[in-house]
Amino acid sequence: MENDIQRKLGERIRNLRKVRGFSQEVFAERIGIATKTLSSIETGKAFMTSQTLQNILDVLGICANDLFSFPEEISKDDMYKYIINKLDFIKNDEERMKIFYSMAKGMC
Image (tube, rainbow, N blue to C red; front, side, top):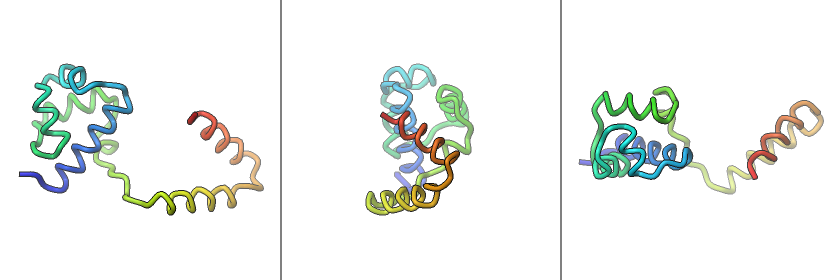
């Protein structure tokens, strides 16, 4: 039975796995479970053992706080407004502008 925390956690694991470039097959092998089991975890249909959780953290190179930090759902327009607001706030601060510029340049 799927619940909200399982679904969110599964989505978070899937997103982190993809960001790190792991296919489901390779990731499942690295954490010591079947691909079908990983699929069930990522879709929120199943939960994992504490050992599988530890293996996921180890393979992804993150701590539990990173895994259980769920990004808030925010619209694209609201994200854009937030970024523009921050840029307006730092536009006269050369050091912060340099940092932001470096971050933005590294995204492409």
